[in-house]
Length: 287
Ligand code: PRT
Ligand code: ZN
Image (cartoon, rainbow, N blue to C red):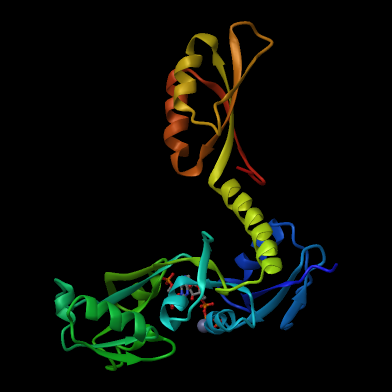
């Protein structure tokens, strides 16, 4: 029997496109994405790819035209479509923030009372102001939000920020975070059993890719009398592997450490007398 194909919607061209396609590739899924193509078939996994504008992805998935999709949480929150968030993907990170001109004497969110705010995210902003009991005038514009205050269209803006340089070069100062966002895998709320099985398989691979990216493989040499101390510092998946070196009185210790704890652990290891510390990237990690 032929397996039913899972239809995935990806951003056609934009900030999420490359990372989305790389994720599929790291999951071992091969496909040809000829430039300008709207659809691609995969060679070795039951997936069919649709390339769309990111704003349309929640609707395609909610309607079941696509079964799953990759989209920013900001777009999801704005469109308010009913889809299920399956997995955060660790890329496309940004925040939706309120920003004011540098000379605006800002103290609290109440300072937005009665002000005109330019944004491409009116629904999210309306909810934010309602939750904070602020009445502001929201002006919806679709692009170049950051220039609205300098041309007299608005008193402040609510826009996506990553490095902050766009705000800075436009004389604006970020004052409130409205939403933190990253790319997420979303799914139609009712997949049939066959498609759900394909999604589970895909998700298993995504988790292995994510885990590998968040962890490092560490090897080091240690005098045997320090082993106990070193093992305490290293968490490992179970516990570290310890093997004797050819030189008596010394061992080689192997373990996996989390990217976030990396420098603290390496410093602690050095202080205990560990030598020849090697840190390697992990390709895939099955937990
Ligand atoms: O054509 P299509 O509709 O598909 O694409 P788009 O132009 O609407 O979206 P695109 O490709 O710009 O962004 C896609 C998604 O990337 C967004 O929905 C976010 O989830 C995510 N993302 C992450 C960002 C940013 N970072 C980001 N910095 N989206 C936009 N920006 C813009 C922001 O609007 C501002 O103009 O970058 C500027 C600010 O960047 P910094 O680094 O100067 O702060
Ligand atoms: Zn868009």
